[in-house]
Amino acid sequence: MYTEHELVDWAFPYKHICLTGGEPLDQDLKPIFGEAAVRSQQSDTQFHVETSGTVLSDTLTIRRHGSLWICVSPKPGYLSSAIDRADEIKVIVPGLGPGDGWPTLDDALGWARNGKLVYLQPRNRRLEIDRDSLMYVQDIVREHPELRLSVQMHKILKVQ
Image 1 (tube, rainbow, N blue to C red):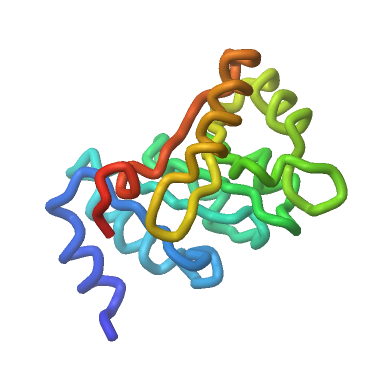
Image 2: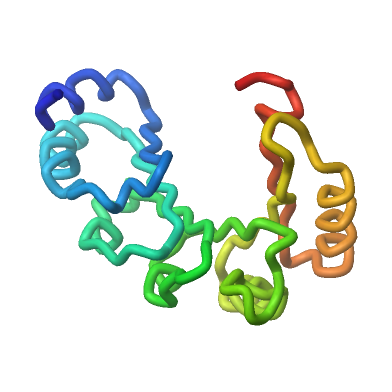
């Protein structure tokens, strides 16, 4: 177990720190950001939090001069307040369907029209790209250029 000081000390040579995996907002990140705020006055380190949007946290309100970037990949049960605070939204497709709790294409288009960066990411198999999902998402993005394509590069490169 590391203290906030030890974690920040380890991470601060890096210019981009991404907190992801599981649900990072299930943790109290305020102590880490508090420790990092002291350090970031002498650094231009960018923090990036990737969340499902199902947990509302004070962390989403921390904006230290734009150094916190919030990516919401909305899962069933996502909160509209998390979407409001997002810098970018990554929608998993397929999953764009009414009634299943996933955002719809209309949601994605509405968020994009409201100025959000909205990426559609094809749902893939565990270790490889699902080509049908990729083609489906490419067709949507061609039809709706306000949406963007996101891919899981590690699956394309076949690395874990």
